[in-house]
Each structure stands twice: as C-alpha cells, then as structure tokens.
Amino acid sequence: MKVLVPIKRVVDFNVKVRVKADGSGIDLANVKMAMNPFDEIAVEEAVRQKEAGVVTEVVAVSCGVAACQETLRTALALGADRGVLVETDAELQPLAVAKLLKAIVGKEAPQLVILGKQAIDDDANQTGQMLAALLGWSQATFASKVVIDAAAGHVTVTREIDGGLETLELKLPAVVTTDLRLNEPRYATLPNIMKAKKKPLETLKPEDLGVDVSPRLTTLKVVEPPKRTAGVRVADVAQLIDKLKNEAKVIP
Amino acid sequence: MSILVIAEHDNAHLKTATLNAVAAAVKLGSEIHLLVAGSGCDAVAEQAAAVAGVAKVKVADAAHYADQTAENLAALIHAHAGGYSHILAAATSNGKNTLPRVAALLDVAQISDIIAVEDADTFVRPIYAGNALATVKSADAVKVITVRTTGFDPVSAVGGSATIETLASASDQGQARLIGREITKSARPELGAAKVIISGGRALGSGEAYRQLLEPLADKLGAALGASRAAVDAGFVPNDYQVGQTGKIVAPQLYIAIGISGAIQHLAGMKDSKVIVAINKDPDAPIFQVADYGLVADLFQVIPELTAAL
Ligand SMILES: Cc1cc2nc3c(=O)[nH]c(=O)nc-3n(C[C@H](O)[C@H](O)[C@H](O)COP(=O)(O)OP(=O)(O)OC[C@H]3O[C@@H](n4cnc5c(N)ncnc54)[C@H](O)[C@@H]3O)c2cc1C
Ligand SMILES: Nc1ncnc2c1ncn2[C@@H]1O[C@H](COP(=O)(O)O)[C@@H](O)[C@H]1O
Image 1 (cartoon, chains in turn blue, cyan):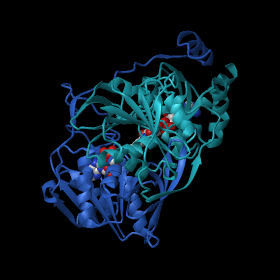
Image 2 (image 1 turned 180 degrees about the vertical axis):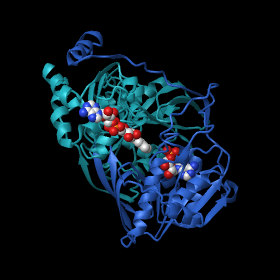
Image 3 (image 1 turned 90 degrees about the vertical axis):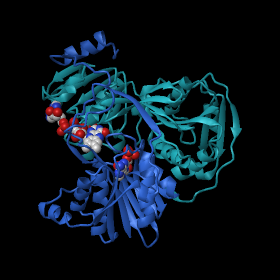
Image 4 (image 1 turned 90 degrees about the horizontal axis):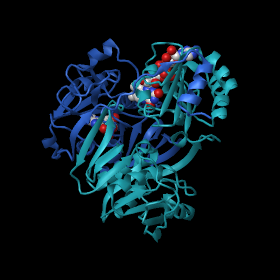
C-alpha cells in the first residue's frame, strides 16, 4: 500500500525567532529552515513500515515556496520514494493545505496519510484532522504507535491523550498524525543524500489542482509576549523557603 | 446568534477545562449553549446546567458518543451548527482532535489555542512556541475556536440554572473503534488544575529517582507532578506528564523546575506560572532567565533537604 507524508518547511526548532519591529510578523531573513520535527517522525514511520514490508511506496508532499524542494529532498534522503511540491508563494493556512492534500490524495490514492501533529511555527495542530474530514476518512491524532494490518483493512494506533494513552482501530484508508514518541528519526547519510538527488520530484500549482487557497484569517499584528525578568538567586534551601513563604507567599 | 461550547467530560464528571472555555465564550457576549455528547451522561448534563453563564444545555446521549471519537463528535456538531456564530472547546487533547474536523466540515478556518478575545472576530493566539503573540481576524461566518485554558479564569461551576434539551444523535460513522485506554492513575491534582507543580527533567536519571525524590516533595506541597520531554522520552514518567509547546500548558501559582535546562519548548508550557523556582546545578541554564527564585545546586542533595524542611 501507498503512504502519503505531508511535510512542512519551518524555522529550525533551535532558532529563537524574533518579532519584526513593525509588528507585521516574524523576521525570517537569513533564518535556518528545516523540516518540521513532527514530519521527520512521520517520514521515519512511513519508511520503517516500508522496510518492514507493509508499505510499498512512500510519497512526500510539501506545499509552499520553491525552497520546499530542499525539504522534500531531505525526505527523499530519509527514504521516501518520490516527492510532490505544490508550489505557491501565497500564504497557506491549514484549511488550504488540507484542500491541496485532498486533491493530491485524489491523484495518488494512498491508503494512509501520515502527518505531523503540529507545525512548530503556526502551532495550529489542525491539518491532519481537516484532511480526514474533507476525505470523510477516520483519523488518529497524536500517535505513539502504529500497527498496519493491510489485509484486514485496518490500522491500530496508540494515541497520547491528556490522561495517558488510548488505542483506536481505524478502518483504512485513514489519517494519522505523529507525536514525539512514535519513533526516533534517523539521520540522512551522505550516500542517501546523493541518491535522493536522482529520485523523482514533481511540481504542481494550486491552480492545477483546482484549489482556492485564499486565507480565511488575517493577521493584524504580531507582538512579543510580555518578558519575564530573571529574579534572584537564593543561597540555600532555607533562603528559598523563606522567600516562598514570606515574599511570594505561595506556600503556607 | 448564540455560542456553542463543547463540554469536556468522561460521561460522569464535567472537566474543569470546560469552565475555562465558557469563560472565553462569556467575553463574546451572546447566549451560551453547552453541548454534552456522551453515553449515560445525565450527571454531566446536570453539572453543565449549573455552570454560571450557560443558558441551555444540549444533550446527545448515544452509545457511539461514549468514547468521544472525533468522527462521531464532529458529525454531531456539524449537524447542529446552524444558528451558532461561534463553536468553542477547550484546547485539550479532545478539543484539538475534534474541532479542526468540525471546521473543515463547515468549510471554515479553525483558530487554535486563543488566549484573549479582542472582539467577536478577533483573537490573540501564541505562535512559535509562545515566542510571539498573533492577533488574528476571521472572515468566516462561523468561528471555530479552541481555548487555551490558562488564558481564561474559569467561570463558577455552580450558580447557573440552564435548561436541558435533548438533541437528536447523528448516525454512527463506524470508522474508529476504541480498543482500550491506559489512564495514568494518581491521587494528585491534575496538571491543568494544580496550584503547585513540581516538574522534573533529564537530570533525575531514572524513574526510580524521580519518584523517590519528587513524590515526597509533591506530597508536602499538595502538588501535581510534571516533567520535561527528556524525562518522558527516557521513560521516567508517562507521556501525560509532559509540560511544553507540544505537551500540557500550565500556569500554576508555583512551578518548581528541577534538573530542567529550560529549552524554549519547555518554557512555552510554563512561563505564565505566577512564581517559578529553578533548581539546577548549571548557573547558566536558561531556566534561570525566567525563574523568580533560582538555586544553583545538586538536586540529589537539596531536594531531600527541601522536603525535610517543609
Ligand atoms: C518538536 C519538539 C517539541 C518539543 N516539545 C517539548 C515539550 O513540549 N516539552 C519539553 O519539555 N520539551 C520539549 N522538547 C524538547 C526540548 O527541546 C528539550 O530537549 C527538553 O525540554 C530538555 O529536557 P531537560 O531540560 O529535562 O533536559 P536537558 O536539556 O538535558 O537538561 C537537564 C538539566 O539538568 C541539569 N542537571 C544535571 N544534573 C543535575 C543535578 N544533579 N542537579 C541539578 N541539575 C542538574 C543540567 O544542568 C541541565 O540544565 C521538544 C523538542 C522538539 C524538537
Ligand atoms: N505547507 C504544508 N505542506 C505540507 N504539509 C503541511 C503543510 N502545512 C502543514 N502540513 C502538515 O500538517 C501537519 C500539521 O500542521 P499544522 O496543522 O499547521 O499544525 C504538519 O506537521 C504537516 O505534516
């Protein structure tokens, strides 16, 4: 069976972002970009399922600017078979991405789509659920374990929920979104990076897919959150307790 | 037009996160209805009717709502969305699982994790792990929103007297089946509702050390226990202990970070706490930049001391 893995190009998780002085957004000039960490986990999961003989083909898709090609090449170096870029300079919000992905699903007919649970830039945590709704498919978000039984036509997913864990059995085709503990992604090796350059990468436009990507939300302003200032150092436990009791008054 | 708030519950008890979501709805200024979808959930409906500020409770009681699966909940909410200008839920794992699905069915955007209401169309939400706050305006007819609970003080659980109405169920989508749940059992307060949180990081070294050192301290302070991602990944504690950008967002009166470096992803989940204490042996650990009180020390030495002295 075929698996589709949508990947987003985002600011590297190590970068401390800065808000632009005019309040119009985040300063992205010369900032290091990378694959969204949850999407690395999604690619890893699909590739492991392929290595285990359960999955036959892994197709990575990214929607966004031309530079998303680099992110797709990374996915190919990690073991994805093909890449699809839906290229646009337009701002893409989760609903628009879900519509583009739905169109790609229509072309590719995968049995499973594995997305990240959340993009670490918009922190939306929406696209997978929206895609599942648009397709009328079942969904399992925040996955920490995925067991595919293609013959029986279902996938069993353990999910990280507020109180602990739950396990769902979904009918295929289905949408799964990854949580941090699903797996530990591998690093791309040099030979695999070289091989990735030769793997197929197709480019489409939203118009080719007949999808209207107009944003529904307008960002009026972006500001820095109120800064917390560092407090004081205490010398020892006795002083700490004294401060908590008598200054902060947070313990009796 | 009214506002629909989705109740968070386990078929027996209304969860307090619902009270925070209602608090956000109150700021929008129209009539508030609470939807209770569950199975054998009469007790929840009664608790919901007592919530301050709620005019109507709508109850959909059917076996296929027992497990709160997204497919069935979203179909139900979508079927009854008419007449509502806003649909809200707390940004819990249930809310995050279901509301984007509702939004897509309605062909509208979803607005995640709002921390403030500017007006009926305009909301503030954190982006980039809370390193920026975006004010966003929606052009959609229906606003589908998840509410960050730490952004809104809960309304009172009592004092209201809403009418209770029965709602027709939507059909069972039959797509997902719950196999089982492993719920972490604890006599301690929930992370989201605790006044004091003791959180441990990688430095604890093992689950055993985590329990031996932090549980007695938490007992003394009536605290909930939390952890960094590194401590969860290493298996010291279950996943639902994780505090941070991609874990739980908390804002207790007192947060004590023990052997946690203070990565931005961790800070995103706790930096709105009223008082932060950091105990770390590295004087340059970033956690000290947000701590009101910092103690540079070896935790294995000072935690037993602290517990004994309280
Ligand atoms: C996509 C993504 C999402 C993430 N989401 C989260 C999240 O939600 N929550 C989260 O917490 N992290 C998250 N992280 C991980 C985060 O980046 C850090 O790796 C993690 O928070 C580090 O955990 P830590 O502070 O326990 O470990 P470390 O960074 O290893 O820090 C251990 C600290 O303990 C101190 N120490 C060591 N020995 C002692 C001692 N004997 N006494 C006192 N102090 C001692 C050290 O000085 C050090 O500061 C995420 C990362 C990514 C990429
Ligand atoms: N522009 C995009 N291109 C491809 N996949 C995306 C894009 N945006 C979001 N996704 C996928 O949707 C997931 C959740 O993103 P979000 O809903 O924005 O938090 C990500 O982890 C990706 O798997």
